[in-house]
Image (cartoon, rainbow, N blue to C red):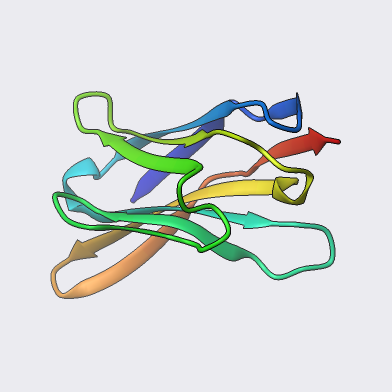
Length: 119
């Protein structure tokens, strides 16, 4: 089991920056992939960024060059640095981790944090 607690959301003007953090506790050693997703009103939850621990990162086309995902192993924290924010980035952001234990994958979600970008 992994528990995730997010922080860092808020209101920012277009062009500004925010940093989201997601602290993980529990079976940290089983985490294989960390991700950030977002859900805007009346839309599906979409992948924003994904990082395989010790491996590659993947970004949605809409955030490439503006967002950076990172994993701090010492603090068991996954972060999302968001720069040059746009009003269309407004959404509830969720962190997630994928664990691999005894041949099975499990996904755990944070509670979500609201990001609002004003024009």
